[in-house]
Length: 480
Image (tube, rainbow, N blue to C red):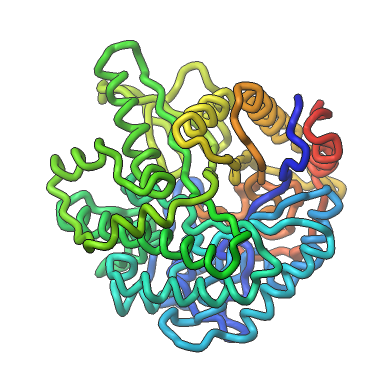
């Protein structure tokens, strides 16, 4: 269990899921603010108007906006070396298309970064984490319009200049490959349906696919331009892509299953990562476009921009693996913006996500072998039913989950992977993106908040809090 000196141990959150304060101090509404609550069996809905008789859990989150000093102090107590967070675009530019930023928003994040600096915690900042300004989606059609590139770069220019001395590590788009996987039209691209509907609903007709992949291409260009701009403003900035790891195993040794698994790895992982890390579309993506009749507009200068704006490191979220098969009758498995066939050799979480620590080692070897740039695991964790008793939570199941994944990372390092950081997801309980509930908890810190929004918001240390503190203090050697 040997991790490199200077390894970035820490945790991760997102502004839309934890920050709250959705309409104060000049902040505008993002598309994420239009998602209603759901649960394990009831889907979340997108509504064009904020309805008085519906509950929108992202509006309050866990109120990190007013608790950030307390929360960062708890992260420091655990010994965090890095905290992955996101900036809410609409706190800087409330509508997205303004010329002048919101000063109160700028000052808020400056205060957060200064608080992190006080404890020597390195911020890892996601620039766009599923929170496109609602006006850009409604007025321009979201990322399907190249106008968004211009507004995104204006936003980047402001935060790069404002926080040049406080932030070194940046991620451009969170889980950018959810669009290539057929998810995220609304939440990731801001492509709004004509009528209110399910949050994850994504059409598969040719017109919808063309619009989706146009949005993805525009995000590629925006990412590359942000990298170029950032390196001009501060040559010490380091930029990463952020991919939702979709690890497919062939269900059988049938060559058809093997080819399906290879195709999934290419289209669901390398499709986006090749553009961001190498500056070009993978050949299999081009074949996919031809077979699906997908046509997108690519400007003559785009190819050069993508080449010049490649990222410095590869980051990803990893929760599970799945199997693929040509047999339509096999039982399906749930997942993080993914779907597949159940693996009979794996256990699953309370929400049906299969638990596969060895898959993390496998994925790390695959992506490092392909791109040969530093790697970070920036999301990984167990969503579970946690019960608060006598001021704490006995979440031994979470400790077991994380211990096994940390061991897998150590093995990947022995394999030769240049792994430089690990920020577990939801280091403090927050609102689930997929279900919109608090009941699905990931954190080392319990937050007294319920699915209906009730609760004191008081923070409590779980059993895993002291365990992770020990892991960090020993640089990953003491994990039992």
